[in-house]
Amino acid sequence: MKAHYMEFINTVFHDKENLTIRLGEKWFWKVKIGDLLLLVKPGDDVILTLGIVTWFAMVPFKDISPNFLSYEHDPSCHTLDGLREVMKKAYGDKFNDEEICTLVFFKTIPVVGMDEPQSICSCGCPSGHC
Image 1: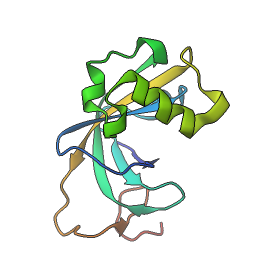
Image 2 (image 1 turned 135 degrees about the horizontal axis):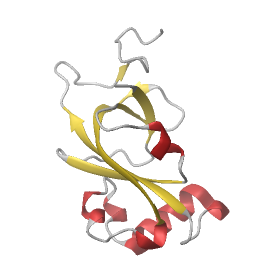
Image 3 (image 1 turned 90 degrees about the vertical axis):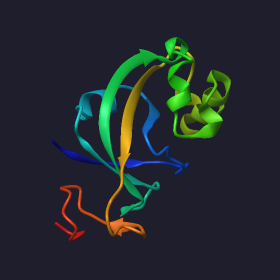
Image 4 (image 1 turned 90 degrees about the horizontal axis):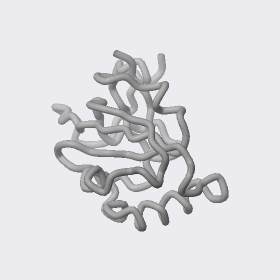
C-alpha cells in the first residue's frame, strides 16, 4: 500500500463511496486498490480526511457512465454536463469530450481524534515532516 496526496478544489465527501475524475492517465498508473489517499486542498499539505482506493478505471470523458456520477464527491458533477463545466474550469483548453480521464473510487476513513485537519506525511506517519 502506498499513500498519495490528492488535491480537491471542492472538499465535500460522502460518508461512504466517493468518485473523483481526473484528466489524463497519471492517476490510473499511480494508484492501486487499497492505497491510502491524503485528501488536501490545492497547494496545501494539511490533511482534510483520508480515503482508501476501492476501484479505478481509465475511459474517454464521453464514455463515462451516468451511473457512476452519483458517486462523484462534488454535487455539481452528478451530471455529465455539470462535470464537463467543472473539468473546463479546472483544466481549461487541455480538456475536451475526447480526452482520457481516470476515475478513482474511494471510501473516506473515519480517523479517531482527527477533529481538525492534520499534517501527515505522504508515508502516512503523523510527524508531518519525513
